[in-house]
Length: 266
Image (cartoon, rainbow, N blue to C red; front, side, top):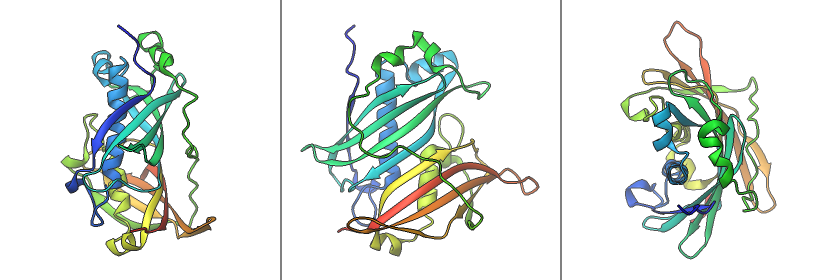
């Protein structure tokens, strides 16, 4: 069998019921498209979930950064390109490019993935899978111009904004709270009026621990941190999400996020 290209390219549509009040694709649904593209790409090349599940292993998302110049609008057809930038024993880096049918670039993404044993839930050696097959598909020369994810620094000024319960629809096929559900819940910390005046430009999220159905999620947000860009003002917030297994137990951090907003463009 001929070796597939290192870069995969997958078609998607901004379906109208996946778009917000402004007619633009929800960030959560875009996140799902990126993760689906990663799944398609790895399965096609022999080191995806279809194979890993037969040997009691799975991929878990460790970090995700999405930076968009604009979002696809309802009914827009677009492509997600994805490729592996590097692979080490316990982590692999994967990039994304979101482009329209006319090759217009909407934005980019970066992610870090780990491989775990589905029984022990502990990290496992990526390079041991199929004799390091993933290394044959590393692409270092294709440009991903956005910054890599950096550690989200939290201070003592964080304020508890909201606590929510988790249910059936929050859980994915790995049995834990879906990676994108955290994104959807944290973006709900700002109301509709905020999104009328601001556009989400960049989202960084680092996953620290798993949470499960029945856990309470607690959202702590820092006061606004302003950074003035060359052309427009941006507003930056940091969010820490913890889980509470029961009222008697202390909170455990499950992820950290940085959210950057710019002026809304209609």
